[in-house]
Amino acid sequence: MTAETQIKDTVTANDVVLFMKGTKSMPQCGFSSRVAGVLNFMGVEFADVNVLADEDIRQGIKDYSDWPTIPQLYVKGEFVGGCDIITEMTLSGELDTLFAENGVTYDKEAADKIREANA
Image (tube, rainbow, N blue to C red; front, side, top):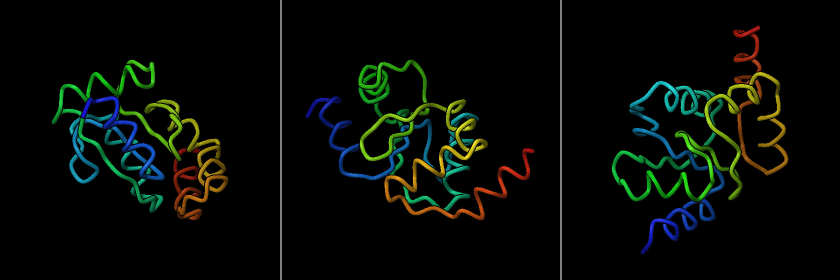
């Protein structure tokens, strides 16, 4: 199976996928840690793919999305963005809207707490 096929299968089989350095329970870079932390705090169930474990996936996800950096968040098969974009979307409430529109369960109170803490 090619890296592209593996990536495509992963993003279509899971509602929310985070391609990251490390895992959701043990991130291995600050940017991955921030995005995984937001998703974990908001109670979002997501698949994590450790790009450090497979060089083909690490490069393949960059080619797949045409986005040069990791982490990368996918919701319902669509690329959403990296750390800066997810941070902005969380603080503006856009991430809540994206999850709600796509039927992704999340904790609205937790999302509000993130915004309050960063106001």
